Length: 309
Image: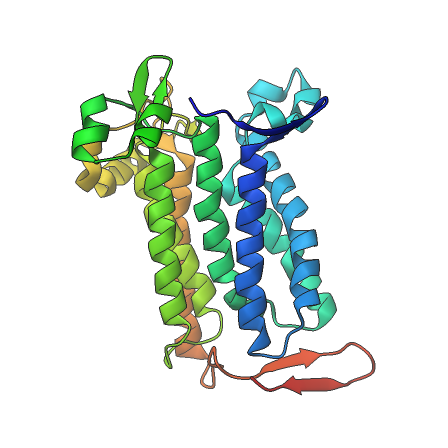
């Protein structure tokens, strides 16, 4: 097992998880700043957005998890703030970050969708890196597999195989599946944003679509999913959609609970994102292109500044 502690300074321990998350955030920030320069947006804007967005994402991730696991915290509410004990959810992080970004971009006079488009590649980079933090902590893994599956079927290097050995059993490296999917998604987003047909908001929607497709299938392998008891037809539908991945095994679920929240949410997000793209293109005749200059509404009098790309 790799040591999850990167550095110890007296009583202070710096975990690799935090280091990796920080590196991911910096890489995402770099991509946003670099693309923002094309539109004349200062790097300070993105620095401030990160400072506001990160804690908002952390709070959202924790509240989302606590809301669906309330029975675990109802009698011991002090544990709600004990985030170091584990328990955060990526969709909650996105909700928190989006709310913060909506408020911040509005105050600065920018269109939220224009900024969200610029930040989309940075978001998927952060998620790609963040999964390696899960790897260091030996968490968010899938169900049990054989050592042969990891070495001979997936052809993984020793350091990954050894880290997937948890208390004598080997597990699906779901962190790796999602990280590779996010890397492919990054390439797709970087290509899409140079396409002439791309309209404002569509890169952000594409990010949601790509990430949710991958998350849907990876979630079916994991054993730590947030689950609830729902209509059997919904559970059957989700299982049917997931069926092409059946060779990877279906992770364990709590007795009496048949629907994985992240899978259901992923399907809903894909449907909504596709619908938004179609409806906006059908109803808005002069929909801005991604490459168009950005209008900045400076809230001092009625001044509007046009920043040329």
